[in-house]
Image 1 (cartoon, rainbow, N blue to C red):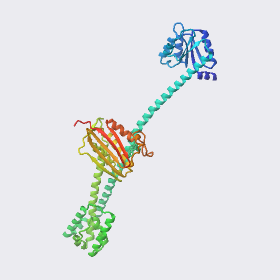
Image 2: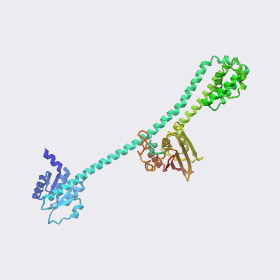
Image 3: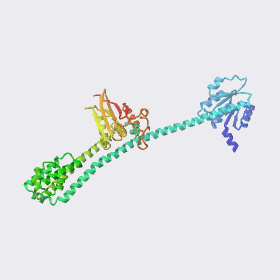
Length: 478
Ligand SMILES: Nc1ncnc2c1ncn2[C@@H]1O[C@H](COP(=O)(O)OP(=O)(O)OP(=O)(O)O)[C@@H](O)[C@H]1O
Ligand SMILES: [Mg+2]
């Protein structure tokens, strides 16, 4: 059993010779060294033996009746199942061996009769070792090819998931963008409901009891409130209130302190004179408080209007961002609109301390493109710029037409790209960001999308000034 394993491991050799004495001799030498030998006396038998169970090596006599060694070798090399088996020719010393022919039809070596035991063994071992090496190389090669295919597949999946990641970040920002106006709307509605619940019953009698003069005072106060444009800082408010309180005290008005607060909140800073009769009225406090509450309602209504406008803008941008052209064909698009869409969606990060300078050429011509994919380009470039600036600094966007190309430059005032890093930034998976913050696929995706549009992307960088310039062919006959 053990022996069988050893012989199998050393190699399986087919020996072909029409002379029984030679067959016995060779089989003896090789068996003695632990090879498994199959002796056959003719070319025909050699072919069927090789096809039935391919050996590791063939020793093949050239001079044989019916089918000579050259012919056997030719057929072995022509057959898919046997073509990789090394063939060593055997020739008598006085045969005229056609070495060129032997090698041309696929022989790897030859040995001459009478046999020298060492020579036979040395050649057999060498060729078996070479054959083994070749086989393991082939195997390694196949493994490597499979690994490469798998890597490419993984990369494609990663690119896909990176797109999702960028989108995920954006969606988190947008959720915040919509939540802020929603919060403002909710609290304004709370104000309004509260006011109505507490005042609705007393309001009719309040208005009925107002004299003509007080009614006009009331309306004037309301008007002051609606004209109020700037909102004051706490400090300004404090100062206005202080001087207002002094004036009220000089006029001998009771509750000067609380009255001053209310009047400032309504938006009355000066022209106190006009309201002196009201202030001296015994019902002044009730009238002014009610006017103040109405003013708050007005303010709440204005807040709701601004908030809905803001939310609508975000939703509009979102719809634009996801504008997916189902036909899969390019469509003419104004590039500046796409950039604005992305900026709207990044509003939340931008407002933390980024000044955006827009320099769009008026009437920028349309570009024939895949708009949703270009949005990915602007998203990645703007995202990188914001990361480089840590959300503090200047983001400048230029867009202009030049010789049937539209060129967009995005410049940030971030730390810049060191010269040794610059040549690598478009490579997939290259990142200088901590794990979890960057996968290094952003610019790879950008480059692929721009190439799909037959455009180019260039970068120039120094500290506090990094510019990515995207050039896209308009592809539109104007
Ligand atoms: N505006 C920029 N300023 C400074 N460095 C930049 C800028 N844009 C890109 N880089 C550099 O190029 C690298 C590669 O950018 P890329 O967008 O491909 O990947 P990432 O931003 O690191 O990760 P991902 O985009 O996948 O989240 C970045 O890690 C950064 O070092
Ligand atoms: Mg990036």
